[in-house]
Image (tube, rainbow, N blue to C red; front, side, top):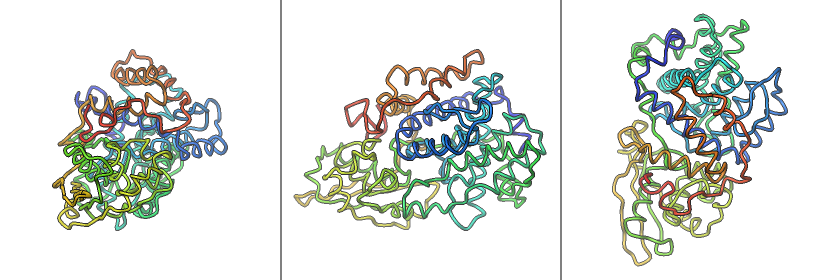
Length: 464
């Protein structure tokens, strides 16, 4: 695998893989721009500023601008993106690569004058291919469901090893260190008790960058057993590197809440739109879904973390407000009386048929009971954004601007989108993108909405 990491070239990447990498960068930056306004991000950045001081030029923190060590910048960036659960993921890895990988890359790329856009994209794609397989391997070999940081740390170590031009043996040590030190947090604990620890991606980014830097100094840690497990069903996951591009299997979220809740959210949005419902018509709702989604049980969230890891609350927001965006799961959305009334009244029922399809598929159905006694049902629903039902590029662009325009301003957000599109051009000035994304964000809250029409902001089908 280290050979793949170091020998992968931009010319080796199919055009649709490169385009997917650009989609990931744009989506992650959009989520990060809004996440930078959360208390979680502010605390993480302050922590990095106080305790991860820069030696020399260091690296700038994402949407903050202060210079800290690359390890600290990776930590803060990973936590900033992870603070808003709106970024991409992979169903079979049961988690997220990019929330850790992009900040790790940026932490080492800042100040690397020899780096260009194509090389940044190549490192990103290579990291995704490693990270997705590491996640699938961990879930196939560990009894407990671990946070993404447990395995996306290997993606970060691999990408960092490439940027640092480590030797193959040294890269093996970097991967082993990242695997050994990666945060094997119990994911379902944060589902049952949502807090700022979330999916561990900030810790995964920090661990991966630290692992590569330690290995460069001679620290040993090989082998990474997630990479070198020789059992046939595990080894098969790694044998198609560079042939099967698993980055193409990512889903993109139309709503900034846990992916497990999104089939039910989409079903509720579709019912509201189809029947032109208003909140006062609805008595209560029933949600049939899979086991893991039913564990998202917080009804009256006190924090955005609790709102993002809830099923009844965003379903209620979908029914009451016709939109589930940052405003709905931010501080200003947590006190909406109609949303809270509906959230209290939602019944959640597990269905074995849906549970048996998880994690490859996620299904739900919603039945709304109206005050006049009528019952209207969505039927089985899966979320928009999966590879077989993708968001269009226009929808992803609309998502980015609906997230970012109100926080950074239309001019700056448009400049970021243009710079991401130009990453394929080796002549493009990468520092222009860096100046745009490392400069502090300006809005004091995450609740501003750039586009007022609710059905056009993360609406029923995620389309414009």
